[in-house]
Length: 153
Image 1: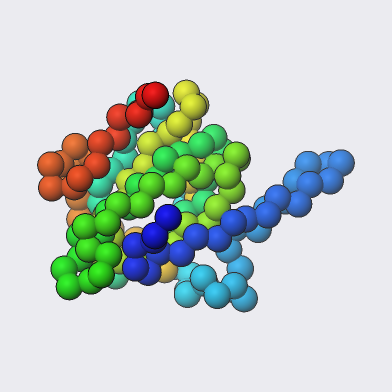
Image 2: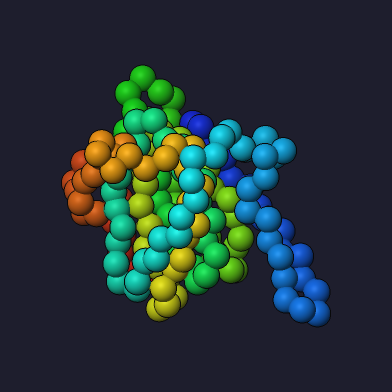
């Protein structure tokens, strides 16, 4: 898949032993790392679309740590080679990935497989309660060429 400019994907490694497993999500010595703002977990219930939004300043670093999530990105930036491009990722316990999302790229996600999805985000900026760096559209906004419906067949 061709990636939207600025997007990076890193396959994560589960390190199992007889006690369970460990999975590093983001390290300061990885080339994907930029800076730390905060870390939080967000939950998406089955049948819910947490979309669309973008940030002007913040980079997001998504890892789905429970369940599976379909994460979709849309590049609405003008004057960029990947403008108009859509990327779709299926991340979680079956496909552990770190997904680096640049500013100005719309993104959203939904749970897959009939169970809630938990996504850890480690953004580069602190959340500003007085002036949030979030700009939103509804999940079915016609300006974004994407349908969240499952494609059968």
